[in-house]
Length: 252
Image 1 (cartoon, rainbow, N blue to C red):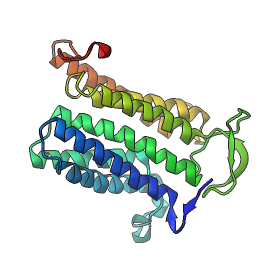
Image 2: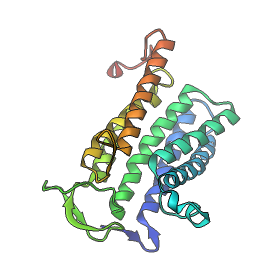
Image 3: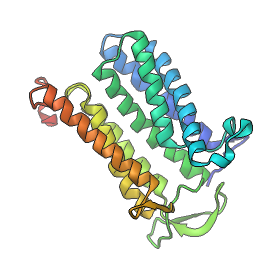
């Protein structure tokens, strides 16, 4: 367990690495698309500001008792779905300003979100911030006695599960970036992200919110449905075809 690296929180290190990785991905993608590579710095900054605002705002909606000047500017309490929504809004506004509000640009956001989530969960694992799962007797179960939310009970290391799953998703989406019609990658991201969160919640420690499901599961169902709707819309706009004519045989 590595809750801190010197005076720097390990989660903060992973947070920074996630944005650096997304910036590297964006720079390469813009080069492929014949756009200025410097756009990568701008889009990552837009995502960073929007993500921080969204993540904190979503947390305060869930915890209204902490609403106030100190609560608003606290460094703790960041919710992924709020960050994803805020970051998406930030990127969409930037893309509109730059005249780049296209399907390929939106697809880059899906890849970036998958990368960011996979790396961010490493930070959760290192800090032991309470995102771990229920008790488990599996060989890889572990305790988090020095975590920010400590437990001496051996539990499912769910952040590791999520990193492995979403890291694989990020790789697949990157591989398929030119194999499918613009917009489909973002829809696929939502489907995969919704499926992952829905399933992992069964072994997380969150309380049920409604219908025997946690709040995160209800949000995941919404993401899954929205992703499916986007994929269907893209296919419909392209005569029922999702694959690009030049897609490699492996993607078919």
